[in-house]
Length: 200
Image (cartoon, rainbow, N blue to C red; front, side, top):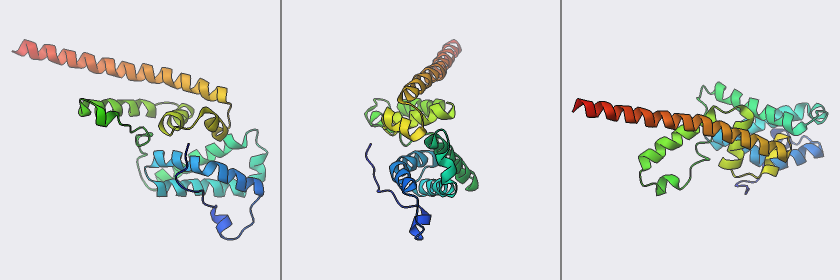
């Protein structure tokens, strides 16, 4: 996964506070991924960076305790998620449709019927938004932002096997929820067509 911007130092570092070397390494390693994820959730990079900086500030304040956790990365991800939610609420914003920008592809431009393709994409975004948090994060990071299983495992503090399992469960949920919705839509269209036929 390519990084579009170099990582910025936490505010504490920019004010000349000496940071623990392991915190600096953690910050440099994960900030780009954090920002990309937060941007997909919040809708713009400025808000994403603010949420990520807030998360790192919180982590820095209790860094020794963070390192004592069974999985520091998993704990840090929860802090990031909470900081992102808090910022969205503080700005009185409706969270961006989960990963809609990240999932934009050439499919819409190449579609024979762009309107139908757009409606189908909205249905998929809605289904993704209904996934449990872990599944939603993995789907967005892997399919929307093109991170590898290993990169996701490192960032979320789980094993690559755990990521693969989460992807499988998410796919099953999406196939069920999205498939059911499409079938209902098709049935409704068919019924409407029958009503029209009877009217003529």
